[in-house]
Image 1 (spheres, helix red, strand yellow):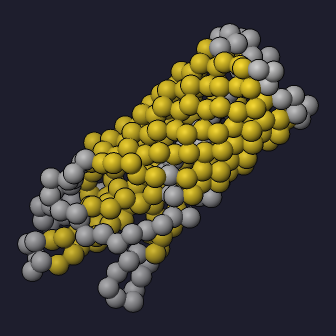
Image 2 (cartoon, rainbow, N blue to C red):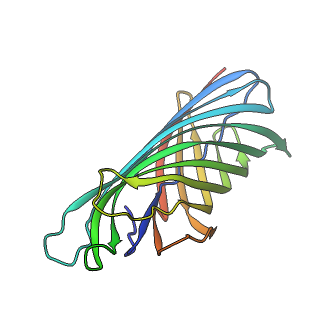
Length: 240
C-alpha cells in the first residue's frame, strides 16, 4: 500500500506505472495486462521492424488511507490516479541472447486525494480538504537484460519527470489558500522476469521509487504521497 507522511500545506500523489518491455519482432503487435497492489495497467506495443517500436499505456490506482486527524474520528479516504501515455523505443541485441532497449515517452495523469491545509482566516487552524490533481509525466527508460527462448530477466532504471500543473480543492472552500504547483524528478529502478510459454508470457515486476529533486514551493510546506515499493504480475503476448 502507501506510505503517508504528515502534512500542513499541500499534498501530491505519485503512483509509478509499470515499465513496458516490448517483445520486439519483425512487424508485430503485442499486449500486456498487469496487476499489483492497489493498481492495474494495460499496455500494448507495435514494432515496425526488429528495432523500432511504439507503446501505449493506460493505468489506474486506488488506495484507501486512514485520515490523519487530531481527534479519534478517523476515516478511510481514497487516494486515486489515472494515467494514459505513449512512447517510442529502440531495440538492439548483443551477443547471442543479450537485449537492450531505450524507450522515451510521456502522458497525462489525474488524481484525487485528501489533505490538510492551513487556514489563516479561521484563527490559524487546519482544514481538511479533498484535492484534485492533474499532471504531465515524461520518462526515459533504458533497459538491459537477457532474453532467451524460455524467458528473460531485465534491469530497468527509469527516470520520470512529473509536473503537477493543476492542484485545486474538489469543492469550493471559504478561504483563499494558494495551491502550490510543483515538479518532481523520480528514479524508478525496476527488475522484470519474463517466463515464456507456448500460449502466453508471465511477467513479474519489482521496483522502487526515489525522489531525486524538486522545485521549491512559493509558499508553505508540502509533502508527496508516493508508492515506494512496487510489485506486479502481468500476462503478455506478441502476435507475429
